[in-house]
Length: 232
Image 1 (cartoon, rainbow, N blue to C red):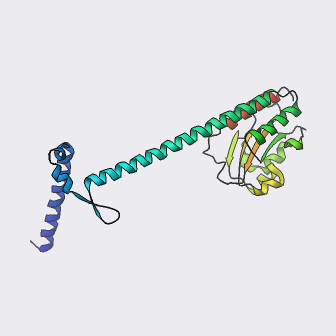
Image 2 (tube, rainbow, N blue to C red; image 1 turned 120 degrees about the vertical axis):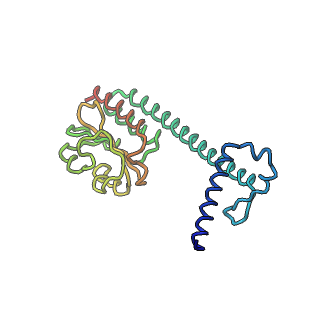
């Protein structure tokens, strides 16, 4: 038998022995409690290059897991707080909308709610094929054919779009300020007598994206669409 064959046999035997030991320890977890001196002598390599005891390694792993759990808990709390704020703003906006006694006041309530309650700087309500215009409240109208030509992202009349839009689309939706925007959320108002859409814009390309939770936006759009029936 050659020297290479002998080394291969020894390597294979060592691997089998290691597997046997690992399997045996898994089925006898009380071994180290009966032989603590063995546990104290075990040394494990650390990322710093220094050897550490098994107990120290276990403590390190536990600290890392605790830190990960704290980060997850912090993230959950932040998400919960964010949702609470969204709910409060949505409630306040809907109360504004319900209290309107005319179409003009409804558009004014939408403007004040989005600007004050939500702190949005870029939004617009567009009516399709219906002559409604309140520029002071960012409410305007366009014909549906022009909208189809200018908004290819909304082809197929999908109810909701969230994500990056072309500069021309953003400028069509928001006017001159659209040049400074990176993403938008556009939703058709369900139940509105004339077709209408509500557009929200943001400079950050990642602010509005296809995987975002649009529950509150959808809820606002549904309420606004129903209320428009009373004034159009």
